[in-house]
Amino acid sequence: VDNPNWWRGGVIYQIYPRSFFDSNNDGIGDLPGITSKLDYVASLGVDAIWLSPFFTSPMKDFGYDVSDYCDVDPIFGLLSDFDELINKAHSLGLRVIIDQVLNHTSDQHPWFEESRKSHDNVKQDWYVWADARPDGTAPNNWMSVFGGPAWHWDSRRCQYYLHNFLDSQPDLNFHNPAVVDALMGVLEFWLKRGVDGFRLDTANFFYHDIELKNNPPKEEILEGGIGVRPDNPYAFQLHLYDKSQPENIPFLQRIRTLMNRYPNTTTVGEVGCDFSLKTMAEYTQGNDKLHMCYSFDLLTHDASMGHVRNTMEQIENALGDGWPCWTIGNHDVNRVASRWSHNNPNREQAKTFMAMLLTLRGSVCLYQGEELGLAEAELEFSDLVDPYGITFWPEFKGRDGCRTPIPWSNTENGGFSEGKPWLPVDKTHLPQAVTVQQQDSHSVMRAYADFLALRKSHPEFIEGSIRFLYNDDQSLIYLREFESNNTLVAINTGPDKKTIPLDDYMENIDNLEALAIPESITSGQLVEKQLILGAYSIALI
Ligand code: TEU
Ligand code: CA
Image (tube, rainbow, N blue to C red):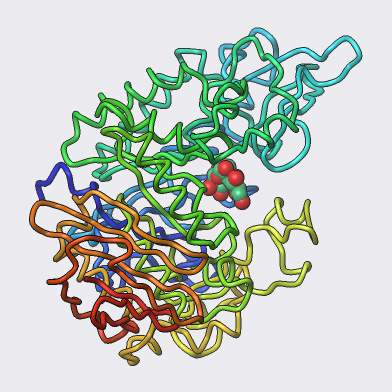
């Protein structure tokens, strides 16, 4: 459908292909599996799907290590399966956004295999190569997100190469125009195949400082508050050299110019590990770079409504005409039902997180299984496959617990596969299977679908401004205002009943009336001028 602005306020459902549905019973989810379940996704009422990588890959980082950008990994199917997936999605009114991992390739990508051969091959400068310091140590103090130095010694070239993630994910050298041209060609390949947009992995990592200057000492970075606090002037005096470089801006502009040639397409950049709110604003302002970005600010363990309010007020201050996207769960962090409940998940609470997410200002990414209220899967060390988790166990258990297969039915392997799933299906997820929740008018899934429908009929949730009136640790009240459509949103994410005298926070409350809340969600009440929010309830007024 022709609507160039569909992404503004759009809701994107993230699919992690390995764990969605396995069509050929090899234990790994695949593209035909996804296609066969798109009716379900469409029934939720989302606008688009985002597919995590399905490209040819040695799977060291489960697809975020690409060895051929323009083909489908045989585990997931064929290019023709992708074409079928797009057709089916479009016929259901779902747009298709695909992940593009441009910052780095797999070390088994032919570009890297060529590059590491010698100092004078045609691709010698396609990656970030640097000599050791005189004492043999790495060129500078940059650190990998996955632990340890960001440099790996290559015994063939007798040089170090840069990897911001695994050492099997060498960073491409964006300072080389041939690299950038090649990547633009990749984007165009998929645009021509009919995709509606890209989720750009690690969008702030593309460029590094060409002189390889050291980052400020770690203590200073931590004190500056990476990822938060655009109001902290100290943070903004700090300059990082391994990411978020000024050269990134013209590259993002070039991407936008390409996207503009393909009507109704969009981009959502992932911005992490820096002062992300500032970067989000920078990358989306002016209508000439990315359409939207999401940060990790709501992917932290801080579930306090003060944190949510701070984050929103800071981005509103910084954003200008930019556009944010919010997410409370993805394939990199503990599932929100566990993360924000101190590991004590509860379905009524999960609904309140959802209601908040869907009424904040911005677009939204939902993560598969979030709509089922799934908890983080409890895994044994021997179950782990994520190298990030294997490295840091037991302090950090890695990302496998949020990547276990979707329970479709309350049967063996949750009906995900007849083979042995690549990660075990969590037994505690089975009673929350899709078919179970479809029968239950109070399920988390019903609440998601009901609320998504409600969001659609309220333009203020999409176009409106946002103004915060009240918060304590577990509850939050804000106004969304658009022309004559004004709605006050009150959310209690905690177990304690709250009675809030609305007239302390608002004028002209005499004629207020509460809107009906879908039956699947506990409703608060407006009694005289008091807002009464029982445990895990919401009110729209
Ligand atoms: O994530 C980038 C990123 O910043 C994450 O590494 C994040 O900090 C970490 O996972 C927190 O748990 C993207 C992808 O989402 C991730 O799956 C990839 O592993 C990574 O890029 C490398 O491509
Ligand atoms: Ca399969």
